[in-house]
Image (cartoon, rainbow, N blue to C red; front, side):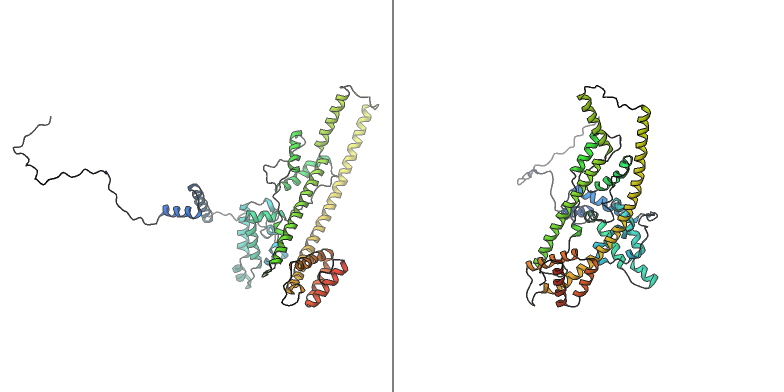
Length: 448
């Protein structure tokens, strides 16, 4: 226990002028500290302000950047596969990057067999392989020549296919996918699902709504079949045709010409969209008319109505024995098989003819575009054949360019080539040649 000790002295009295101090009303004294704008926290704050993003958005962005950095620095043999290893034709290697709209971008990256099914990963790997193979520095070292034309094509194709919006525009008009490759309807009903399944899978890529129902099998229920056809009859397509828009001539400051081109592009997109909707509806109509399930459902409904009408009483006997009925069924089966084989052989021949005709059309179409563009440049270079110092009006622009479009559509490809050669002789000769060609085809006096 503590002991109490008394000291033998007392405290002196307080001075006369002593005043007690005031008690502090704050338990905390504030000080000013200068903070330097450095560090991860400050950088994150500025990044969020710049992008006007939340903490969650900023975290997701940083994670994406870290993943991309890690992927770029990960030593994995991503190139050890057959992605983008398709053979390159001489025509492909001689492609002109200035004519990038006529390029088959999937073929340029070696993905023509994958096309719209190619994943972002496959596009990235194919691009990396093409860059390593066709880099200009590599060609200079190997041949001593500097030719970067195809390398520019590779860069442009990657730019389009790696951008979701641009890739959709290209996929909408990709001539590498044949929309006309549809069964003829003469095939065996047993092959209906085998032949029509890929057709609807191909069309499904344009759907805004997902998931897209599949064609199904012979065991699909009536509700499933009805849902499938209702989906495609009410198909909501994102397919667009901006990729085919005509561009205004480089260096042209004529607002009337720009307005005319934009108006024509809008009209062309609307026309192509309308034609595509009609094409899809005809395709669905054809599939519906050939679907063996629909025929079976309708036969069952008719039988049910007949049974209800006859109150379930059996009909009159056919008068044929069981052997005769079996023989007739066998004969019908053999005839159906024979007809199916003949139809399949005919279909193969027609398909080969279509492929050959398609190649010819594509080559002619490509050349026709070049010739038409050359003639159009001659017309614009001649100031639409107006007197010197006079700007062409919107009416003149629309009249002459419309006449050129109609003329190129009416003439044979070799006639368009001859017309271009005549136009290259001079402005007066060009005007006379265009006027004569329009007169011969009854297309008016736009170049009079």
